[in-house]
Each structure stands twice: as C-alpha cells, then as structure tokens.
Image 1 (cartoon, rainbow, N blue to C red):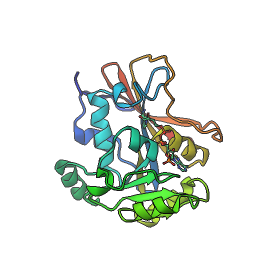
Image 2: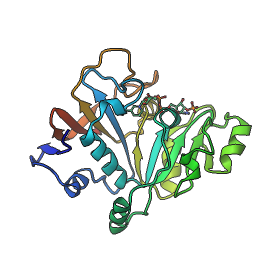
Image 3: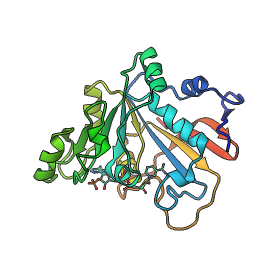
Image 4: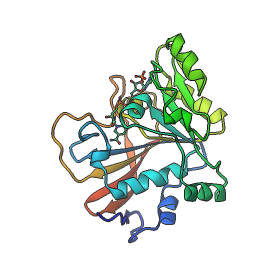
Length: 247
Ligand SMILES: NC(=O)c1ccc[n+]([C@@H]2O[C@H](COP(=O)([O-])OP(=O)(O)OC[C@H]3O[C@@H](n4cnc5c(N)ncnc54)[C@H](OP(=O)(O)O)[C@@H]3O)[C@@H](O)[C@H]2O)c1
C-alpha cells in the first residue's frame, strides 16, 4: 500500500513531502493540545482491540511526523498497556529535525493513570531518554506511588481523578506548551469534558467495522464539542482530517 499523501483542502497539492506535511501540521506557538486518533467510517476506534488494525502506512507516516512537533507526548495508561508502548524515543532524523527547529532532541512522555498500574521495569521507563511524568490522583495507592517514583516524576493532579487543566498547567510550567496526545478514548473524553482539547487529528480509515469496538472518545460528563474543519489530506481512500475546536 502506498504512503503517498495528497492535500485536498484548503490548498490542493499532490504527493506531499515530509517537509510539506510537517508544515501543514505546525501547531501555533501558544499552548496547544492536539489529540491524534484513527477511526473507521462507522466510528470504531479499534480492530481486534487495538488501533493498529485500522491504520495503513500513510496513517503511520503522519502519526510519526506529528510527534516531531511535540514538546510532550501525552497518553492514557489504558493505551500504554494495550498498545504495548515502549520508550518515547524518536529516530535520529527526527532528532536532527527537532534540533534544527529549536526543539529539545526528544519529547517528554507523560502518562495519565488513577491506579498507577504501570510496570516500572517496562521500556517506557527503563529506556526513556527523558524521565517520564506520571499524572495521577491523590487517591492513588501509596505502594505504587513509591515504586513508580523511582523511575518517573509522579504528579498529583486531582483528588480521585486527574484534572486535565492541572495537567496542562503543569506541562506548560515545565516548558511543554505543545502537547501531543495519542489517546485513548477515556483520556480524550475527560479532556473534552474539561474543554481542554484544542485540536483533533483524525484519520478516517476506509472500512466499516460494525461490531462493538469503542469509539474514540468516552465520558459520561462530556457535552458536545463543536469543531471547525482545518485541513483535509487523503491517501487513496483514506482521509486525514484536522479539526480545531470552535472558539
Ligand atoms: N483509534 C485510536 O486512534 C486509538 C488511540 C488510542 C487508544 N485506542 C484504543 O483504546 C483502547 C483503550 O481505551 P482506554 O479508554 O482504556 O484508553 P486510555 O484513555 O488510554 O486509558 C484509560 C486509562 O487511563 C487513565 N485515565 C484516563 N483518564 C484519566 C483521568 N482523567 N483520571 C485518571 N486516570 C485517567 C486510567 O488509568 P488507570 O486504569 O491506570 O487508572 C484509565 O483506566 C485500546 O483498545 C486502544 O487500542 C485507540
């Protein structure tokens, strides 16, 4: 399958280079939180329990390029566990590109978890180029807090759940204004409910999955969030959409 990507709107262009894609996805200089997801046409966020089954090389290409702009990659613990995340370490060409654009060589990695049920020996922590940050609630188990505190900065960002704005404030205080979130649906739902999402990058995979897969956002408290179309890219039958939150 080809990873060629065309711009459809607002400026049509064929077969975008990585540099053109990076320019298209450049976030504003102000604090900005971007969520990146893939969904089937009927709203499934997974196939066989993971997002990877929905993606193709074009989605993977954009997924990787989006990390280049990130001061920090933010992730819910459920996605870290299910998708088998390792260390947040970008490849050498990405590091060179980041240096040339005045960014730190590697983005920070921040995880959100109420229970702190993450393995301190996993590559996420053991091979991290930058000490990860773990946002949790004051109610988190003390034993887990101690264990993970050996390998990460543990930050209380709420009483019984993590408050998205407490996360944003803390990240911004650390100099991480460009927050790039890779899900999952519970994290997205919580951030939507708090009005803490600025942008959604959504790959629309050309498949109707049916079945009972979750959708990309879930939170009983969230109200509808109107979004404004910012860009349309395409790769074959797949659309790569960018939406900003309406003011
Ligand atoms: N289609 C896509 O692009 C995409 C992207 C990402 C993930 N996914 C899929 O989504 C599924 C996982 O869904 P998920 O909803 O479990 O993912 P998730 O949002 O990454 O993880 C949920 C977990 O994150 C923590 N969490 C999230 N928000 C929190 C808050 N406000 N306060 C405290 N803790 C919070 C909790 O961790 P603890 O349980 O540790 O307390 C919670 O159980 C997987 O199948 C994955 O493949 C799909």
